[in-house]
Length: 413
Image (cartoon, rainbow, N blue to C red; front, top):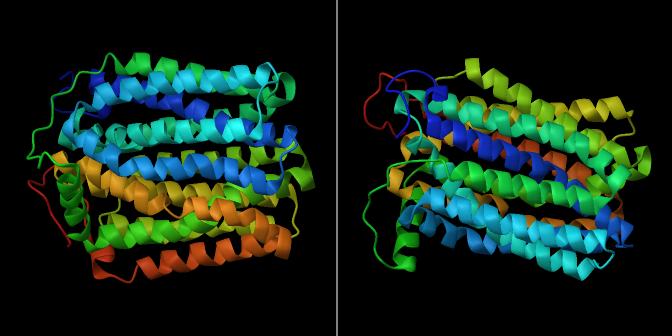
């Protein structure tokens, strides 16, 4: 399987290919949303139209996710990752050509957003569930941190490049870079060699989904934090996809939104570096407490402050969310049986993002009717309040990290 019995995740050849593929994909995925938002605006689209274009991606992604979880547990996860990477390269290549040749339209971008949303959904559960297959159990915490650190480092670069690429070459060429990163990732995944996961399948899509749902509701900490994520993405989706780009572009110019997202990703990167050393025993208690810092970004945008203060708020948002995310991913991978991992990650993704399309769709009209600051203040309040409420269940506060000396699974219910 290509990994050493002991040592950090770097000892696994398979893990290194996974790390390379996911990192290069993250580079393109950071460039694409900035390029897409500016492409819609350059085509004369309104805030509401921008919201619907982004919502098309999110809605189809949500609708495809549960099927993707079943597929990721039934079939080869690496094969699924290769196929979706190749298809995504073709889809984004088509969008790039349409923009470069001035044949793009807002409806076309919305349709292709849906296609890309479906492909992203098919890839996500498998790419997360495959991680324990690439490293020994003792190296899993290091693997989770390293993957997210590589992803966030690439996204810092991507967000920083996005405004420059669009400014000098146009949104079409920026999307073309995203297509190239998918093609490169697909090549990386062809070199991955993992053992298949064995488990009992009901041979029925509905039966497999029910088994995944039972696994989710068997753990209080799991469904509580999925519920918290649902509220987070309901309000923050509109901040990131609609209100944020408009407010920052209006107040500070086109490059300001890219800089804000770069500061957010620097916070992610800093949080990832911290998690390489900071490994709290009560991993979800610590992670969820840090999650309250995410309110700093929308709050700073709502206030009449200078750009550096907003960038600091974005940094704190990223820092808190990353410390939570590393501990969250590790908790799932340590506590959930391998043959149900893709389905649990699919339910996690669905619960997290099912309300995001609604948030994207209503953010523009609400901002137009009541002002952008209203949505930003609401988002900050919801993000703080739900993080604190999620700390109330004992299972969230008590779930403990497995050490390399632990055997079996330790569940806090």
